[in-house]
Length: 123
Image 1: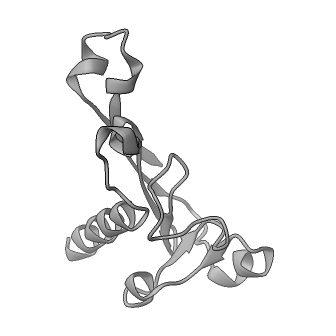
Image 2: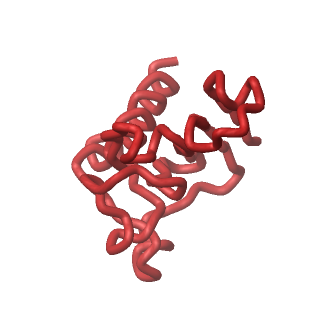
Protein backbone atom coordinates (compact mmCIF):
# COMPACT_ATOMS: atom_id res chain seq x y z
CA UNK A 1 0.00 0.00 0.00
CA UNK A 2 1.35 3.40 -0.95
CA UNK A 3 0.05 6.83 0.00
CA UNK A 4 1.33 9.88 -1.77
CA UNK A 5 0.77 13.57 -1.24
CA UNK A 6 2.12 16.34 -3.48
CA UNK A 7 2.20 20.01 -2.55
CA UNK A 8 2.78 22.53 -5.32
CA UNK A 9 3.29 26.24 -5.13
CA UNK A 10 1.19 28.89 -6.86
CA UNK A 11 3.38 28.97 -9.98
CA UNK A 12 2.61 25.28 -10.61
CA UNK A 13 -1.09 25.67 -9.81
CA UNK A 14 -1.46 28.60 -12.20
CA UNK A 15 0.51 26.90 -14.99
CA UNK A 16 3.17 29.61 -15.08
CA UNK A 17 5.51 29.44 -18.04
CA UNK A 18 8.42 30.47 -15.79
CA UNK A 19 9.58 27.02 -14.74
CA UNK A 20 12.25 28.49 -12.45
CA UNK A 21 9.43 29.50 -10.08
CA UNK A 22 8.04 25.97 -9.81
CA UNK A 23 8.30 24.20 -6.46
CA UNK A 24 6.91 20.86 -5.30
CA UNK A 25 7.16 18.82 -2.13
CA UNK A 26 6.22 15.15 -2.35
CA UNK A 27 5.63 12.78 0.58
CA UNK A 28 5.31 9.07 -0.13
CA UNK A 29 4.56 6.48 2.55
CA UNK A 30 4.71 2.81 1.56
CA UNK A 31 3.77 -0.22 3.65
CA UNK A 32 4.83 -3.55 2.15
CA UNK A 33 4.05 -7.10 3.18
CA UNK A 34 7.73 -8.02 3.55
CA UNK A 35 10.08 -5.93 5.69
CA UNK A 36 13.22 -4.46 4.14
CA UNK A 37 16.41 -5.21 6.04
CA UNK A 38 19.61 -3.19 6.10
CA UNK A 39 21.56 -6.43 5.71
CA UNK A 40 19.92 -7.06 2.32
CA UNK A 41 20.85 -3.67 0.83
CA UNK A 42 24.07 -2.70 2.62
CA UNK A 43 26.36 -5.14 0.76
CA UNK A 44 25.06 -3.69 -2.52
CA UNK A 45 25.96 -0.16 -1.38
CA UNK A 46 22.29 0.85 -1.46
CA UNK A 47 21.66 1.46 2.23
CA UNK A 48 23.34 2.97 5.26
CA UNK A 49 22.59 4.30 8.72
CA UNK A 50 23.16 7.64 10.34
CA UNK A 51 22.42 8.68 13.95
CA UNK A 52 18.92 9.98 13.04
CA UNK A 53 17.94 6.58 11.63
CA UNK A 54 19.79 4.41 14.14
CA UNK A 55 17.92 5.86 17.10
CA UNK A 56 14.68 4.67 15.48
CA UNK A 57 15.93 1.26 14.35
CA UNK A 58 15.71 2.43 10.75
CA UNK A 59 18.08 3.02 7.83
CA UNK A 60 18.32 5.05 4.65
CA UNK A 61 17.85 3.57 1.24
CA UNK A 62 20.26 5.39 -1.07
CA UNK A 63 23.94 5.23 -1.90
CA UNK A 64 26.07 6.80 0.81
CA UNK A 65 28.78 7.89 -1.60
CA UNK A 66 26.27 9.79 -3.78
CA UNK A 67 24.08 11.20 -1.03
CA UNK A 68 25.78 13.82 1.10
CA UNK A 69 23.43 14.82 3.90
CA UNK A 70 25.00 18.26 4.09
CA UNK A 71 24.80 18.61 0.30
CA UNK A 72 22.02 20.36 -1.58
CA UNK A 73 18.67 18.57 -1.62
CA UNK A 74 17.82 16.90 -4.87
CA UNK A 75 15.06 14.90 -6.46
CA UNK A 76 16.62 11.60 -5.34
CA UNK A 77 17.04 12.16 -1.64
CA UNK A 78 17.09 9.72 1.25
CA UNK A 79 14.34 7.17 1.77
CA UNK A 80 13.77 6.23 5.42
CA UNK A 81 13.07 2.52 5.91
CA UNK A 82 11.96 0.71 9.03
CA UNK A 83 10.73 -2.84 8.60
CA UNK A 84 7.92 -2.83 6.07
CA UNK A 85 7.49 0.98 6.20
CA UNK A 86 9.23 3.40 3.84
CA UNK A 87 8.94 7.20 3.99
CA UNK A 88 10.22 9.47 1.27
CA UNK A 89 10.16 13.28 1.16
CA UNK A 90 11.43 14.93 -2.00
CA UNK A 91 11.46 18.47 -3.31
CA UNK A 92 11.79 19.82 -6.81
CA UNK A 93 11.85 23.11 -8.63
CA UNK A 94 12.78 26.34 -6.93
CA UNK A 95 12.77 24.61 -3.54
CA UNK A 96 16.08 23.03 -4.51
CA UNK A 97 17.35 25.70 -6.88
CA UNK A 98 20.25 27.55 -5.20
CA UNK A 99 19.71 30.47 -7.57
CA UNK A 100 16.38 31.06 -5.84
CA UNK A 101 17.95 31.22 -2.39
CA UNK A 102 17.19 27.67 -1.34
CA UNK A 103 19.37 26.33 1.42
CA UNK A 104 17.71 22.92 1.69
CA UNK A 105 20.09 20.04 2.19
CA UNK A 106 19.45 16.29 2.07
CA UNK A 107 19.24 16.41 5.86
CA UNK A 108 16.01 18.46 5.62
CA UNK A 109 13.93 15.72 3.95
CA UNK A 110 15.53 13.15 6.27
CA UNK A 111 14.44 15.21 9.29
CA UNK A 112 10.91 15.37 7.86
CA UNK A 113 10.91 11.60 7.28
CA UNK A 114 11.99 10.98 10.88
CA UNK A 115 9.16 13.23 12.15
CA UNK A 116 6.65 11.32 10.01
CA UNK A 117 8.00 8.00 11.36
CA UNK A 118 7.72 9.29 14.94
CA UNK A 119 4.13 10.37 14.28
CA UNK A 120 3.20 6.99 12.79
CA UNK A 121 4.82 5.09 15.66
CA UNK A 122 3.01 7.24 18.22
CA UNK A 123 -0.35 6.08 16.85
